[in-house]
Length: 283
Ligand SMILES: O=C(O)[C@@H](COP(=O)(O)O)OP(=O)(O)O
Image (tube, rainbow, N blue to C red; front, side, top):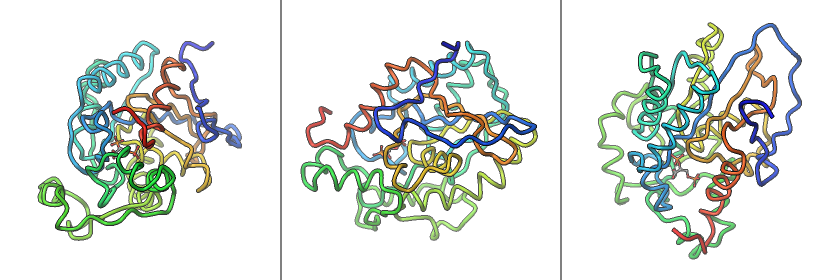
């Protein structure tokens, strides 16, 4: 087994990556995609989305372990991109600190934010599964083009989200920010940032770390790997596990994605995320 172990095989078809691999090209570009460490609401099984939550104690450790793992295996990071949600920024800091790379530039954009879960924000997934059925919850969580009901002013977290001055720093007016998003809509707002800001850094030979969220990373993976609208439903990313992608000059994968770390632990973590949508999940 290679020094860095390959845990790309998941419990479901979508986590077993079956790519038609691109032909070898002149350059190899390295990208690490990372879902932040466990946040307080991941632990409580609530849809967190655009509510700003910091990492739990376990999430801090996951981020530090991720940094240590990358360092131990001789990986390098030249530039970091995060969302403007604290859990992704905090994760990036902890990873870079553990790698001894605090000096590396970090750029933030709302375009890497978690999917906007609209009216579902703050709700407990298991309770939703009890009330609406597990299938409905799976459609809300994992379908490609179903947008959940939008958030409105009466929602308990509306004022907290839209009154937050971080959303005045965006490249679009606050009024145009989403009120709910499908995964497709996440990809639509993420792609301009990927193409115009991140790809040029990679083409300059920089190794990029994107410290973001389950669904912003899934959307980008779908784009990079050409995953079908149906198959993306079976791709699940656990918290704190770096996904290594090696891309050619056209930003197509040269080999299968690798989820770095202990394969058994990664499979257990994937199952835990999948089970969050079950009515019987133990929170
Ligand atoms: O919004 C959330 O609660 C989770 C994703 O939830 P699911 O799509 O897994 O239900 O996002 P993250 O923890 O990556 O920021």
